[in-house]
Length: 333
Ligand code: 3HC
Image (tube, rainbow, N blue to C red):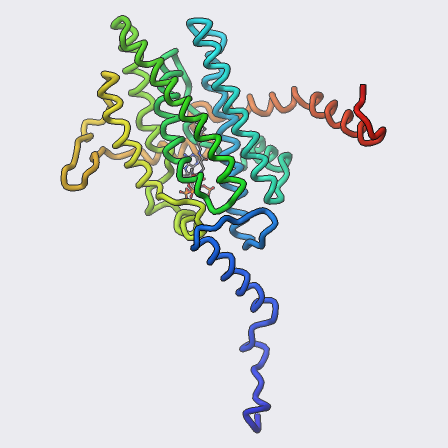
């Protein structure tokens, strides 16, 4: 070029107008998150943020509805009318949580049919913990105490998630999960005041669920490929390892009150760290289960697929009724 004034940048050097605009949008989006603001469905968001949320929220929703199965099996065998009524309410709550969460994910443009198709085809994940069996009545109490206890520890920070609909759904979910955790603990306290056989049943259930609950928080931070970005976006507020540690620290004194032994010879208070030290988690077993090879993965999925097929007529009838109402403009008889 002959003069500076004619020296306009070539196409490779000059950012196209669209990328200048999106850089501005990204900056505005990130500043809102950094200022602890919320992103709402109508707001601009990067495509990767949207996809991450759809992945996490739909996995979470699937966990809630698959999570109805281990305890649902015990409704017909609950030891008293009161225990049965409590368990029915609890399992029903989990179904409700699934519905709030599918609705939150739908605000991101993903349809419920798409999300359920991903679950039924085995493409979508759900929490590893629900691929283990509930073998006796003490398991129902331990699921409430430890599984729901771990779920709340993970979900309380999600009430401050940057995506508004997810954060708001989590407030109600956490209140209900807190009831679930307490009813599980109360049921175990009753068993621990009973016969030696009942106490042994509780200890056996704790031995089988403890390590699997620690794995629920996800892989160690060093292997968690989503964490760094999810933290930057304010989706995750506390890392997998920190939540796991918080759960252990909170649970050890509860186990002492209950009178059960947590099955970890390395579990001991570390004065210097101000936390409990604990033994190694079997991550091979975790990944086997996450990847479809746990004890009940196939059975859980088959149950969900069957429920969907058997319920197809209900969805068709509801749609036909809605179409009729829309057509006549009034409530159908
Ligand atoms: N079970 C199955 N898969 C798991 C898992 C678990 N416990 N923990 C992690 N994973 C998967 C992740 O989904 C990811 O796989 P993907 O890339 O194919 O999606 C992979 O392992 C790597 O893990 P990351 O740590 O990188 O993944 P995330 O950043 O998403 O963290 C999480 C995992 C902590 C579970 C996070 O997704 C989360 O907080 N989710 C919302 C809460 C939730 O889903 N809870 C499930 C339990 S709900 C429940 O238990 C119901 C209640 O009623 C008891």
